[in-house]
Length: 223
Image 1 (cartoon, rainbow, N blue to C red):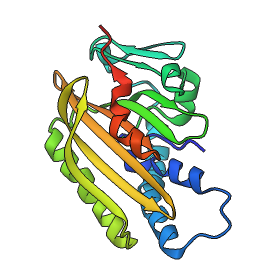
Image 2: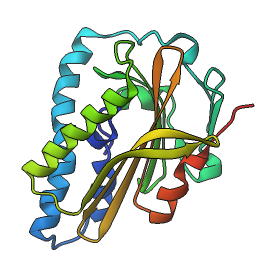
Image 3: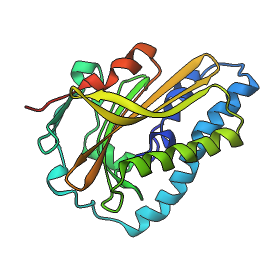
Image 4: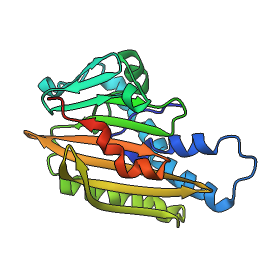
């Protein structure tokens, strides 16, 4: 069920669509095309990570940006961020689960991963590699890559844009991606903040339209 991690959420977000659609005997051709488009980057990402994992056995050095998990609560003092998974009816992945998912990728390091039992919502926090320093350029590149995938698979029921979202009471840049497959709509929100020279990517994915509007509220201030 869980795929290797990539900070750009389009690569792993298809988990929700595939889970929500599982068990349906009849799927329309259009819906199938849309699902393939969302998962295309996941297949490419897994291939690149297979080679990456062979060359990188140790954890990336993210220094003080690394948070701490205590039970179902993740706290990152450097970012002043807390995520209480239990309070949001979710499970916080422990070190063993994170390792199984794949914390490291060619683009960064996943420090937190939370999910609900039905995989209808996922929350993540990752730190991009030091060489990625321009949020705007990174967002534009990510969006263009996804647009090409949408065009290749003729995805029509998609909304993809660079906008802003509220995080810890402030407006921050984000990528909003909305894809409908059959009767399931998946909402992906990626928020970006900076801590020193490092870019932090905070992600929320859900199939619930209401939670799509408030999901970032699950992240609160640590102090």
